[in-house]
Image: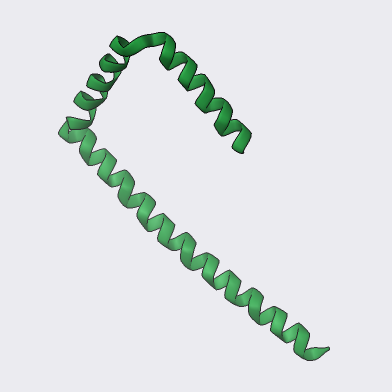
Length: 80
């Protein structure tokens, strides 16, 4: 995973350096126009809400599984 991240960063850096400052400013301004649109903001906020609720559910599920695993280990060690 770290190798992929490094490669992606390197490719992005090279492409960005080739595009130059002018293209960077064009992309930045386009991004600003898109994200300032109210409908886009609503979709982004909905997405954040979905991610937040999903994260909470996954965290709770993981905690339950860890608790169950701990109980199973205790039961095995107590029985031997």
